[in-house]
Length: 133
Image (cartoon, rainbow, N blue to C red; front, side):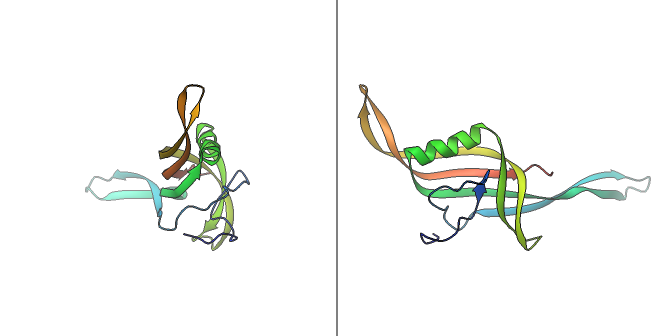
């Protein structure tokens, strides 16, 4: 895990969560292609757009209810301007991404209006996928 006081790995619409995800997420880089076969059965393909980035299994080991709901609201908005270090560009860039699934395990609870309310989540996971523009 990145030590406190370090810069965040990601900014979501210019904002960072108070804690960084653990290091070890899966970074994928794929190229979309338009392909056909010619009369000899050979594949004829050409790239579409630029290479697409995808960050899978970003895990926040522990988030408070407030931080979990902050992230949940970002996911509900679907699109996000993500600021991150791009290994293709060798620089910090901002690109439009969308969120995949979000999951988390509630581990601490408190009484709230006659029911139990989660106050802390562990193993919060989210995926972020490049929109290609």
